[in-house]
Amino acid sequence: MKKRFLPALCLPLALLAACGPPGGEALEPGTVSRPPAAEVQFWETSPEALLASGDLRGADLRDMDLTEEDLFAAGFDTKTQWPAALPGDFDPERLLELGKDPGLGLRALHERGITGKGVGIAIIDQTLLTEHREYRDRLRLYQEYRSAAGDPASAHGPAVASIALGETVGAAPEALLYFIADELGTGDGEDFVRDLNGYAEDVDRLTALNKTLPEGEKIRVISMSVGWMPEDRGAEALEAAIGRAREAGIAVICVNSRDPLLEPWMGMGRTPYGDPDAPEDARPGAFWEELLYTGEFRGRDGSLLLVPMDRRTTASPAGEGEYACFAGGGMSWTAPYVAGLYALACQVKPEVTYGEFLEAAQSTARPVSAWKDGMEYPYGRVVDPAALLAALE
Image (spheres, rainbow, N blue to C red):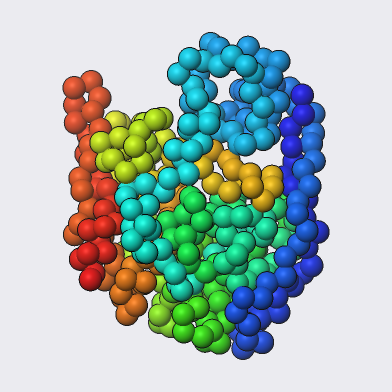
């Protein structure tokens, strides 16, 4: 049995000089150097080990008997090869297609022309497969720093980019993408040292770059799927850089529950074949559901703002037209979704502030509960994008 490595990309250190240090060369909109298409490599791994891991991406399962397996908690992709017989209620193609829908009625808004067009979303994350069809035509910047330079395309970078603004899976399918690939520290394995100073520099780079961009291509929001504690190396520098970006009119979305602008957000799940637009098919998020029932969940008072997180299909690093379906997500998937929603708000009301957006989201969200053993557990309020944008208008 073979399992793929992430695709290998040969990338220069600087694909576009415009995202250098603050005050550097101005970006010329629409120009991005792109690497060749990725090639898939493999390593030997047993099918049994893959099944136990719950990660079936790229797996060849054709010789396995899966008819008695519960596959709904497993991740897979369009490279996964399935046996002819599957459990009767497991339909990977249907799950993958449902997962492409960003949910919450966003596709109806897209049909009305509310797509984030002309709004810039910047992302700082792991390496990106720049040629993926979900975002390649709107990629305005790709730059790498530190050990990210030369790394293969990650699973994480394409996923967060497509969740924010993918053409078919994203919240804001016509927004512009500015992307920096960077590492959260130095060293490998046991020698890895977490250091947020690099991300602080990246935020400042994007803030400086934005001053050079023409109207209609400005960065309105930076998404970073990272969190930190005050004692982490570089935390103070990163928080100061975020403050400078916000003062310059750029919202910053990250995973930081100590920030009052970010604390209300949480990701939720969905029943396997549930309607992505229907709150009644929402579920507590996979990684925190048990905390809800034990009383340890911080949103048990129902105050959190919920957006889709689990059962999402995203761009895959395996190729420009490949997709991955994740049964369970994490807050990494939540940050780019919120950034995409904010891009829609910026299109509808160009002068909107993030504070106004958050207030509208809170005032229009709809409460949702889970039931277990005859008991009701409120766990938040589902964001209603149509009502949110109407409130802003």
